[in-house]
Image (tube, rainbow over all chains, first blue to last red; front, top):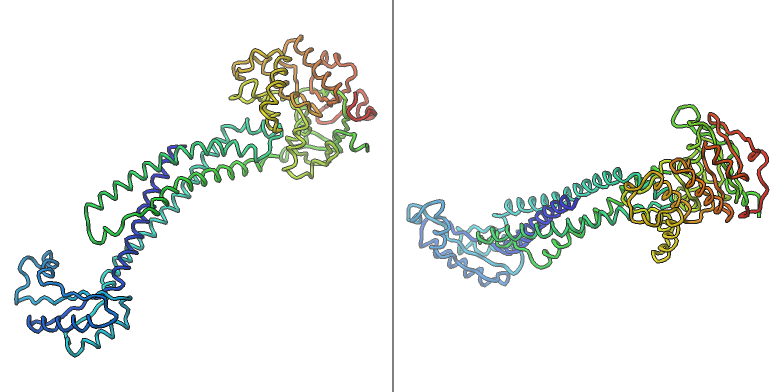
Length: 275
Length: 241
């Protein structure tokens, strides 16, 4: 029994850790992207492109809704495209748009973007403005789905754990049926008999819960270390803070509560069939 | 004190059947009075154990009414039955000791169930084990005790709480004649203190050793009344022998 609870708790801690990390990742990425927009100047002529980029940056930089504006250096754009286009792709034969990173004080909503388009229509007619959140919306949606799946796994594990305890309690009841009947016939009430089983299951659950917590923490730390090596801008946002670790620390307590409650209900249900 | 309060047990037209089989007990009516000593006799299969199960509230009858200690126990909510079971001591035919508990803990079980503090049960349990000659086996598990020793532990467990009623199913079946007499004397001593005693046995010699006892005889699920215990129940004051 302690090993079953230990495995359940370890997997639940891992799933909860994953779910919380994904939540943090989605929240941080959404927060970062919500107030960002990208302006592309799409013009084949490098001089016109540069002139329009400078003009657009100046206009947007003067707008009170904008916190900061920065034209991405051409080398940076080349570096971003290099994995797809190869080295030295930015020659005249393949014009690459100028990119302007715009950080807003508020959210990059449709009304703000439309107003920017109007502002730039005269001095930067080749400008195309997009909210950065639009680019990563499918990724964030997928991450959000994964997060909910993690919480679904936690629920399933809770049910599985309860079912395992139920089976264990049933087996314990069958194994101790004579003892239960004797205590029952000597005047023991249901609560007294249920408490005997609760104590037994409680001990198993505490041992299993602590063991599972240690295993789960170790697994989460190992996973965290593996992802930290990636050091990607996106993945780096998925760490766990102190509150998250406290939540993970509560997992065995929930497991113990579920185990004790399930054992009690199983015993009471069985006793209810006796006179 | 009303007659109903004086009567410790009252069966009225009780029948018992398991499933759809024929009744194994039919039209059972009798009254047990406080401080009386009853023997329940009958051939094997006559229904003695089934009747005792009704007495110690392990079974509900299929029909009829049962009052115990002045209360209708048929309609009593299930959660109130333990209080009535605690007023009884039961010696089971197969002893039914708890295997993983020592002789001491088996005897102490009714007191613990009743909430007696550990400090208060050491003396009585030790004395009781001494009385049944098992003081030196207090730590022994039932599996290491002989049949007779197990029976004595079962009897000690039944009487340790000074019950209002003692129900014993063949309590001397596995002990030598000397110990059987000693145990019957224990039952009589309890009876003199006011405990109603019901002993199921087919040992005629045992019955003869308690001359003041009343006899109920079961025959094929029907109750006979050879000593008139049922037709002319003893008129005694509650709690007095």
